Length: 196
Image 1 (cartoon, rainbow, N blue to C red):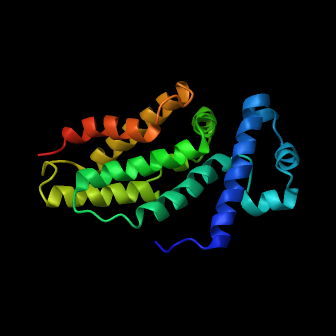
Image 2 (image 1 turned 90 degrees about the vertical axis):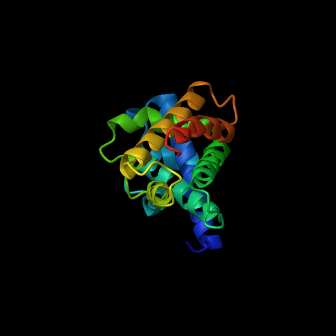
């Protein structure tokens, strides 16, 4: 992935700022009682600016994941290693860092509204984290780090479920521990079951 330009970074930061404000409003008033006008007034942006960044209110949550993925992808693009297990832990540590920087409230609100959304970007196999994990797992199987009978898709799905569980727990505990460290610990337990 190419390094993000200043303009791209600013666009991501603007979307994340609007997203955080919208999530706080959803928490205060309830998702269905928040209008786009409410989000715009609280964010000090025009309705036209809102529609420049989002197609609808529902898209805010998916956009948050997408914008975080872009930041995550840029961070991991400089990582070089030949150890699939450590690569996976590194990827999740970086994801944990990004989520922690945004605050537990954003993840909490996302998890609250995700079940009722039609499109759930977080589950997409097209997400950079999913594709990257799949590639690492396949390399790990080929290089005999992971058991040869391992189903790569099932392995990635297990990692994704586990990481969502860690994030959910972190939200329930209102961010009272370092997400990066917990990700490493919990995912190490999972990875040890797949390592030769």
